[in-house]
Image (cartoon, rainbow, N blue to C red; front, side, top):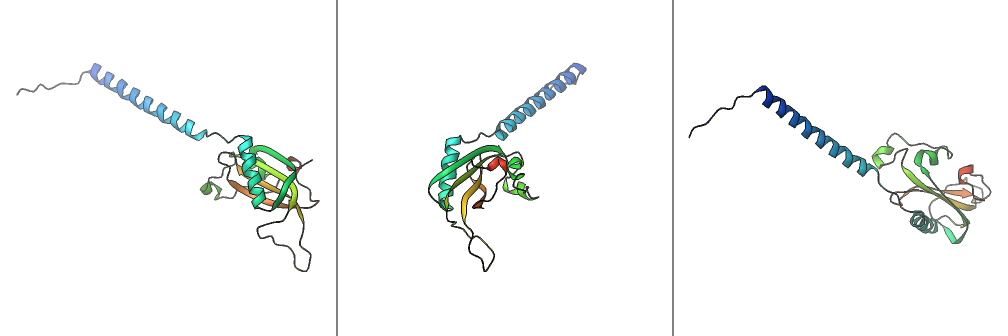
Length: 161
């Protein structure tokens, strides 16, 4: 069997380099588009988030029907700022980011906390008339919650009329 040695010519080298560059560019663009679409996850609709939040409020101690409700969509940083909190340095490990879309739900009604609430000794237990919930708007999972004392002021973003 005779084999013929192919010698590289400047034209072949140039065409091979162009072909290789085109392959690298097309793979890069494909990966970029895949990552961009994966990072743009949609959020649940308001009705689904409201249903999840109301069910959770009942589990946390809301008795009966709400007397008033407020629902607000924003990102996590916007929700935490009025409450005087911010993301901790390890928040990313739990999938929490400042620009994460959240659903803030505040409900007024008869509230008997079902979880442990600390209050000063030798004083009567405080009464609560609201629950504030912050849910991940993508999946409806609880991020944070709080019981609000009767007659306590909330930041204007979360006040119920």
